[in-house]
Image (cartoon, rainbow, N blue to C red; front, top):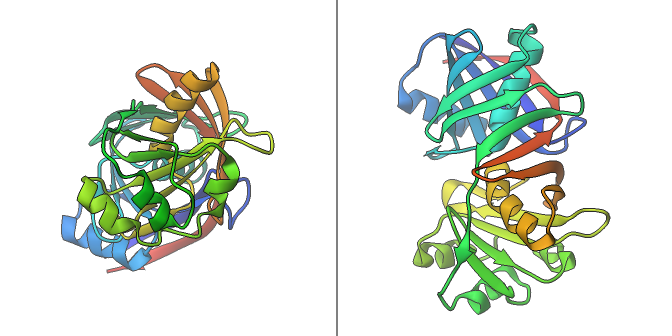
Length: 267
């Protein structure tokens, strides 16, 4: 079997920045275990597979190197880029049916625009701040909030930037009942907020730019800052820029994509 594959750097204006995703369009679904093995072979944070169901409509699934996930923003943005620029260049809007409902991506003049379900966090009542700070090698966060992921909030961007990596956070998260951690703070250098995202239990020690995390980051900082639209920076070693809009039940993310690789899989 031969399958087409594109590797696209999402939330990036040029290759080798942002968050890479492998995109594999299918004529019909292949076995789940084969998709998982392909994702493991690609060894990227996400491999996306989609099947066309109608004009402009697709079923979409995402796999990390070791598991299927419910939501992935950057691979959705990258999937739409492949459709708009390589598969169906007349298309201006793609509608994806996913585990998280319908996700819509529309072509924009300054990057594609993607609508995702918001993830409203609430204060976390557990006493874990000191352990989280120690695991990441920085001072304890000022606040903890919970949603799909655990969110740790610091007072300054420099502390979030100073995190060397996931360190010993995986066992701490497991004990607390989470598999992903958002580290965030007010922004610097012209940004409204900064963040990083760690999910070592999913074979993603640090995700370079995380769309799903900004479904929590955006409404949180929009309320704190009294702004509807935010300029956000994920300050991972690769880094990436996102324009984020709080639209109540939905979070609107806008960002560029850059093609890195075009190829063919033989399995």
